[in-house]
Length: 218
Image (cartoon, rainbow, N blue to C red; front, side):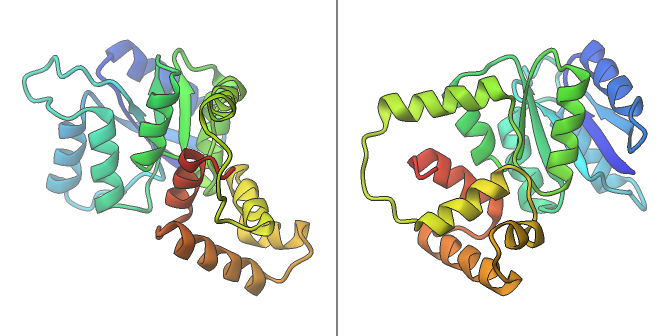
């Protein structure tokens, strides 16, 4: 079972997302939080906390409650810094390219526009849990359009094969699957990833994808 937690300052949104998650046979949602402060307080104070696989994080936490000071971006950054194995999916009403880049740069590996449709939400959770990066086609198109309009062609430090590997990782494929699809050994794929990390000065697949998208390499 994929264990999912929800952080959203809207009681109605928390309820809706948890119901959608619990409707799936392969996942569950037993914890919801009104803000990031309560999320971290629970993790730090409760004994024998069973950590989730995926956290659905509201991008724009408005801090309306007295104990809320942390927005979704800051919360995601702290969560990835302290518990990097947890995958984060951002939930937002904003589909601007700048917002998307901030979300991915914070460590999120999924991006969903409110209100979430059930198939979109569940697909994003499954993709995030499997190590992939997920965003709706309309959001991906906005990113693509932005680079075509604003990014001038320049030196792309990644080889064609390295770009192929990153593109497949963006689609949620694991290293073994990438090796099979490209008719490469697992060792060769690992070597490509090490080269990508070194060229981009990053330490993880999520960081590599975020930077490659931001630089216009993909």
